[in-house]
Amino acid sequence: MEKSGKAMGVPYDFRMPTLERIKERMWNPDDERIIVPRVFGVGWTLNLAQLKRKNAPLFWLAIALYSLALVSIIRTLVKSLRELKSG
Image (cartoon, rainbow, N blue to C red; front, side, top):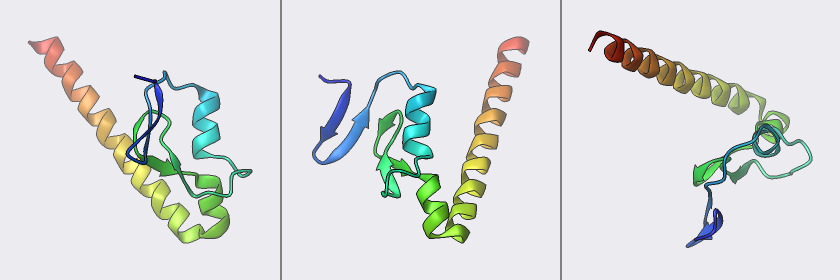
């Protein structure tokens, strides 16, 4: 199986993420698309540069949601590390 491509029209990319690819997908003012393939995994993500250009309020909502998701991930990691330490 290829590491990146499309399956039934849905994009996937299982290559190790790079800073260049993250920037290309999530902040690319040269790409007119707002919805682009994910940096890693299956599905799509947002090109925040185009979203900001075309719909600033939706851009700020997306930033808030990404921030909440990041906080949740960090809390989960901290909890897991504490459990490993105590157990």
